[in-house]
Image 1 (tube, rainbow, N blue to C red):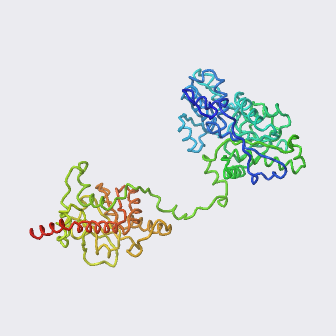
Image 2 (image 1 turned 180 degrees about the horizontal axis):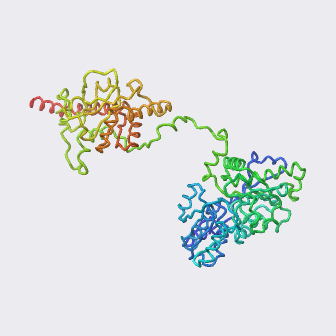
Image 3 (image 1 turned 120 degrees about the vertical axis):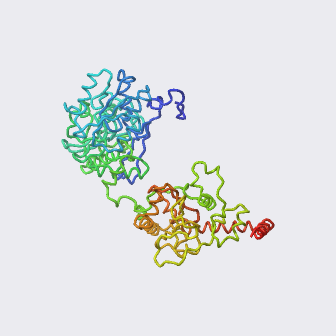
Length: 597
């Protein structure tokens, strides 16, 4: 490593994971608004173990256990863990030796996202049933089974985080010395108590009634290792262990019940034990995260335990006992050992909705959930080219085939313009004034009457959502009129997607139209069965974009037009103007047409 924190060479990643090749992990003082004892001379610092390369505190114990294990570079590695410990074992075994054979033994009660995370990092997963949290010494538990497996199979290694002394010694080697070097004035160290050797959450130095069962929210490794180092180097330091409330788990820490059997020498290190509820843990970690110290539930539990300890000491008139004589202040450290992202569901389950910022326009969560894609929006020219010439009926060789003459798609009422635009090689003669008989008081499915007797879908279908009156006034030849309730030339316009209520109403009407209207359902069913694409038109392109996303979700290859029917009209008018400006060419074309007639 250089002084600029750059790692180079074939062992760069290995060096990156070596704590001795890195600067100390950050210690950040929390804002005064999270420290109710600031006026009492208390300063509270977060030790960001989440800044480790693997972004979790367990990478230190994992590193210590792997380096001390003979054959770890080649043998299969198994561990009873669903979280950071086995994740770190999997990452580090690859980084150190390229060993990818790591299996996590995980409770079948674990959330699928946790299982996906393990698999994302390349770990194998083996599930077990029964109790989710089992005692390390239970002869019928998963840890005892793995010990037997490793003893009977020489090709298998079981690090055994719960009774591997290299677990807690990793914190004695790295975490404790870092803290003391960074803050020699430290007086209180608080961390959660978790798995028997992990330092997922540092022990809280919290004062509590003796004998009250508490939940460990980090690891005995961290509280034992870092705590032992701090107390041996500075006996005045108080170490607080924070536990889950029995029956009210926070991810990572443990409850005290059943954990006293762990073989780590943690009891002689901890000065106080405290329980913290999951709700308080989640809330405190959320407050930390909002203040810029991104931390998960066990980190929040560590801080809450520390604050509760300080409150107890203050109530008993003993807070001054924690002061450092050289500064006159009470300097505390708690560990941040996890991140909040994988526990987001828990925050919203544990905490009230009033604790979160509101979502505006929530009505949009109940509509328009189908995918939108810019590739499904044609410019008018592209739409006319593809849906006027049999483009979609020609198959894979469509680009090499000559399209049918534009004139064949025109209405007889527009013949005088046919040769003009045909000679000028423009497609806009396909768009003409076509009329479909008398208007109907009730919007219903209709089809352009200027296409002969053929009534089946033979290529791409054009669906016109405009009102029956607008369709009768002007439409694309061969298109279907499928009026959308409430959509008229007057109501269309503006920015549909800027009005959430309107988006909901239009979406709901489109769903009803495509799924409940008999004529529309029959038409879309035929289009779907034949595999033909559809071009959906509205006045300005917004409603047709919604329609396209709905149809796509139903398996119909649908497209819309930028600007809708008005966009096509504007482009056609613009094309006619450009053609008229070429006076000589236009006059010649007209004379040729009149002569032929």
